[in-house]
Image 1 (cartoon, rainbow, N blue to C red):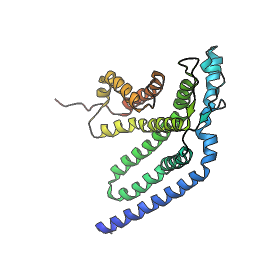
Image 2: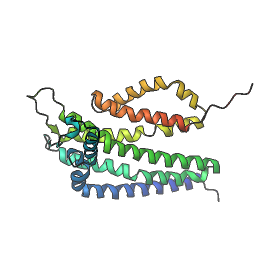
Image 3: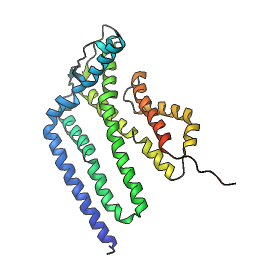
Image 4: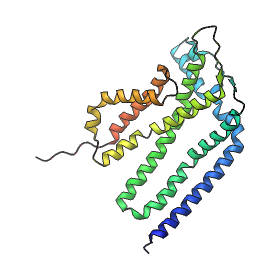
Length: 262
């Protein structure tokens, strides 16, 4: 049965209502659980027991390295210098985590709404794009949380300009860097999806990406410099290397340019 414009509008309205209800429930849950999450998840990179630091020590043992960056115990103590900061960070962090968590449900609702209007071959393409986009985003978040941010924190927190200067990290600074770097890594991991979609439109192909690989490296460094919350070369390199690997993955995913008949 063919639906009218108002029928479609009603379906969209109920979809938006369901999304808002699910998001609100998840946001409230995060708000209640935030003290536990702060201690065991968000602040986990501040402590020497974080899994990636154990990996660094294993690498140091395996390669017989004596560098203090790999082997020394690591602990960061945060301070709060703003009276209202804990409350607003509590709210904003719960909001950000709830948005990230409910994103698959939001995509599923959008899929339910647009699927009836698509042809079978379009359904397969959109389904593959949504699945790939979701997997790559959360993979980027995990890479940012377990590798990029801990390395960044470990380097910057132990870096000394002078022995007479003591590094004291504020709560606001920690959370801003934490959320920015991890979410940016999730977004940057969508690069293979973007290039794949562009290849379906005939705008890019494998030979083109290979030809402009050097230009892409320069662009990746610029993008890494923009999205990194700090301007140090160490953090920039940590972000740029995964982006370059994603570019190589994009080359592998897209098709060759169709041969042009004479």
